[in-house]
Image (tube, rainbow, N blue to C red; front, side, top):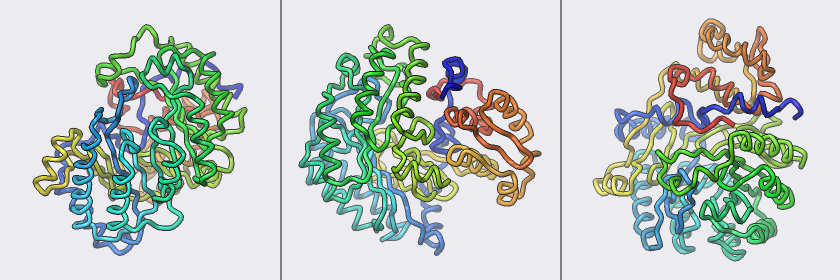
Length: 460
């Protein structure tokens, strides 16, 4: 940790993709249609080897009762819970169309409900949703079944109810415990409330509890965030996601309510990250990679030690690299060598389903070069190393010739102590793991050709 200096953090304080996919979603095109998506679903259905491989499911629940000013998610702010009833009907139609082309009873080893606020749904609606999913898909024993939870929407009884539905992982949105920061972003939730919920979740027996934090919010200072980190250490969640706030009010309207003058200065933001890295590791957390920390005995930390980490649109995962069926407005999925995204507005999403069509409005069929680069980027992002020979054999290329320019760029990162290059492969150093997005960017053909990266968040 003594090598992670503020100067080094400042040097890599640049925009870059999070690589939940490669190519990234900004490269999706409208030329990829629902017909293309149906074709890959049916190819999966007809291939016996693929049919036996478990799926991952993502369900987007866009509703929130109140607006958090920092939020860049696709959400709908409403005080009308009845809107969720109609939405669940459309989700059911979307699932029926998937089953029509994919086949009923496909095994699922990973389910994630995100948003928005999934716990916006009433208990009866959650029961209806889970029954519908279990009727059409087969939830395999030992799978990861997670839900994002707004602490303001649940109590101990509701947590027990979520466990009865089959959820075994929770993610609590905390962001910051400081009352002034909470007021500045319009998200008031006392620390005591979160502590009580985490304690109850442990009693109930949830396998893993994650807490989301954000640094760089208005009214935050390095000292105030130190206090939040100390409380997090006391809370002791199994996993921590530590995100940098990206202030992009031109793109995300809610952020216009944040006063730019109240944001921490760049140097203060870098200091928060530097002190966070030190504090969490001193507290015994393993840096899994890309903003994620886990206790040593958590499945995510174990998967990192054993080289079994994977990455999908929900971030790091212990589950095998598998096809992802994404359901709901704006949801992004991956099947085979394609990505697809649903309509981003509720009106268009519902209109397409009213016409009996899958609501896919854009996507991408990956080229051979995309697939090769994805294999390289995911190896670096998940395992932190790769052997040239393995890529050569898998893709019938000469790695050193194919990536001559990229290896030249990595030589500069090697001089900074971030990677080690040898005649046989690439290894991300312990220090380089903190900047792995920057390492991966060396192999991103699109980013290297695009001087305007402002659409991405900062890589640290």
